[in-house]
Image (cartoon, rainbow, N blue to C red; front, side, top):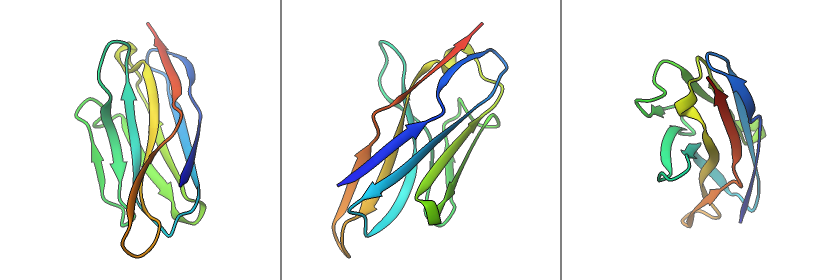
Length: 120
């Protein structure tokens, strides 16, 4: 089972920046995609960005051009640099990992979430 620990959330003014980090540990044979989802009050969880182990990034339209996802494979860590933040970016941000526990068994894991609040 993977353990995902997030950090970097907080309160920021509109137009500001935050950098989220998430480190994976546990019974991991190989990490595949890692990424970020978010959930605002009263809304469904939605994709923010994902990044494959090979470096292919996918962004939600809402963050395109403002958010940058990156990862350090040696540290099993994924980052989300969020710039030009808007009040509508306010949400709990969840780290996500798709990983192998052996050569054939694929699992998915989620972090506990970190709150991001953007004030207007």
